[in-house]
Image (tube, rainbow, N blue to C red; front, side, top):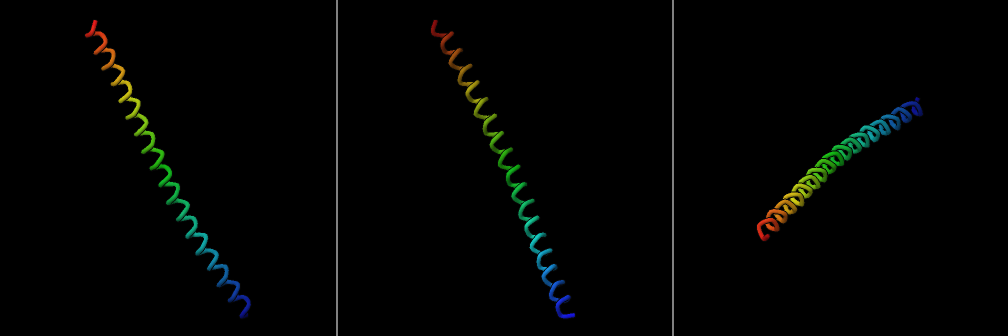
Length: 65
């Protein structure tokens, strides 16, 4: 009977570890998604800034002629 109790205790410890690891995995996935969105937003802003620079350069060049 002692062995069965010990086995249940080990199984419960493994279940707890599994749950903790799943929580960690889910938190990391959420953080990865947030970082991907942040990077995408920054890249979009950078692209818009380059487009604006290009438009302004074209405007300046057209005024010089």
